[in-house]
Image (cartoon, rainbow, N blue to C red; front, top):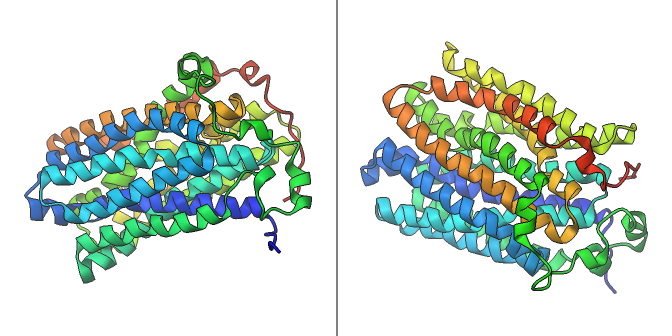
Length: 430
């Protein structure tokens, strides 16, 4: 007899959160020990920027392809392929011997990590009704902040006690352990043996129909058509401008604290996690708020865009960070960045689920993420150049303005009529 798991869709959401947490812990590990690796390998800041850029370029290329791969393989198999690949790539960092071997490991990581997002988005589409989609997206994206918050203290501790190579082996092994749980528990609702019949009856008419959860057959998925749609290229543009902001916080905050604020590795481990805690709160609260507005009668597009507007309004505080006389004030300004970006992302990443049929969700999510990764790669090159020749102040200034610019573009490029086919808001019990 199979024991049924109560509230299984929330268990699935927790698994998606864990996958995203591991994903971000893996990518952030390098930034935590970047000063130590640069010293060991005799790398300049420009070398470090180049390595990050190669990661982001690989990430951008595969982000576009990963959505298509996930749509073709289906959620369960697609997630398995990408988590397994990035976990091995992370562990290979321990074998690095210099600039180019380290860059090669980052490229492998960049080719495998983006699959997390289209796979997680498809899982949300399969398990969550419209009024809970942004909350589902917010929950799994909260893993990015949790991973970013945990990586500094964990990686710093492991590095101080066992060396930075062991830190990469440890963080990479977490993904392989996660895979065992995923393969045991995950199937779409209509096929899941752990799901209670009462819960399936509750969500059956509000989630993607069973035929949309199957892997897309050859010839039935036209990625060119998806890319040409206004909804798709609008999301690409929005993420092109805003994803670089969070990449800056992830990859450059530890460097900034050590170079400009006099932190050592132990202090980075002690304090660099704080902004990501606010990101966790923002992901969950931002996802919950749009669902709450929908249950109060707001149309889906109006609720999504309004919460994104609230998030964008937090970002200009970033401009004050380099001017703050104390380090804790700069960290506080960065908390506004992570909190506002989380409000933004919880709803922006729900839009592909709202705007596209189930078999195109992964592809559309992948293309939009590609835009963010390309923007991140270009911005990262610019960051290395500006920081080397000037300071961090211009970078913080640009970071504070990107979200207000992008929300104006979203209101202009995606008027409510493009959501005409979205299901009406419904009230659902948790």
